[in-house]
Length: 173
Image 1: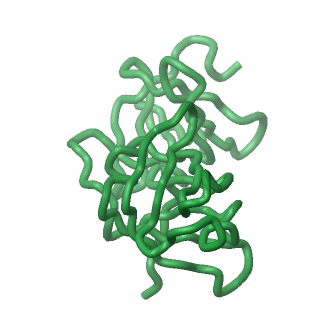
Image 2: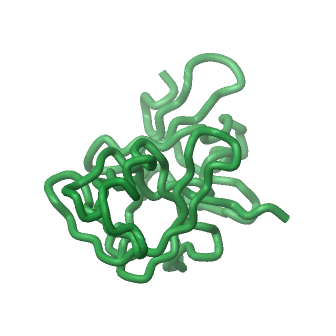
């Protein structure tokens, strides 16, 4: 069985000469993902471009995290990884509270109304501000944008890959 990997950030540049990198976070759990001792992997664009790493230290700085990996002690050690994705394996993902779920688990879920009408499936999740917006690919017509709020999302069943919603006036127009 192949291992599933989930992107938690991208190395956008080096930082200084002591082997630190600048990482743009792509996770809701940066304090956990980039904590000392975290086991991650760097993935490049080509086949066989994968490198396991362990976080030695990390700190936020403006809109990035400055991360140092164990065994990488100068700029020449980390320079080749510029542009690579930083990922966590499925086995190292955090346990979530009840009624919480990962974005990756939501993609592909069927969306149905409380009356049972099939609307399509979730293809993307946007985070524009106050609440997330689920982009639902409809069988015909334009995509449906569903706000992730209690008034709209009634039930989420990750195991069945099914989301039940109540459509507010104007959502299908």
